[in-house]
Image 1 (cartoon, rainbow, N blue to C red):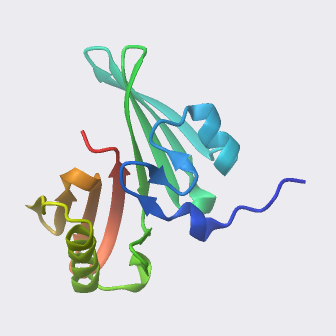
Image 2: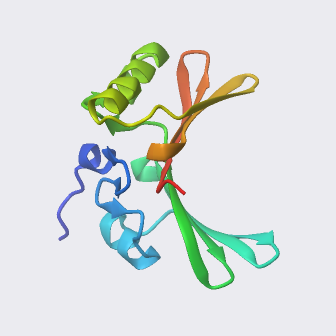
Length: 151
């Protein structure tokens, strides 16, 4: 019998590294070894040779998208509705606290703030490019979170 997954540790975001035990350089096989078999696996043709492999781990509220140019791996994005970062659980906090927490991380690590806010009503999309974090808010609620290796 396999050891149960500590889902809280799987939700911890490490900028420039990954989320939990999933590294931004992990292969599909390595991801499955960590999270188990996905409920859904889809291959999406994006045109011009680009495609993505989308793995949905509904039991963990985690989706992993592997993006390719032909056969060449380009990047990975990990999606969830909740995240642990810089000492707080985003699912238990409001938008103001989350934004302040991210700003504190930037300040403590002497990283230049790089925030773009996009209005895609009813959502507001907060993108922190240089740490690879994007959060979709609808009012004060998180709709989605994506983490990836900064480009």
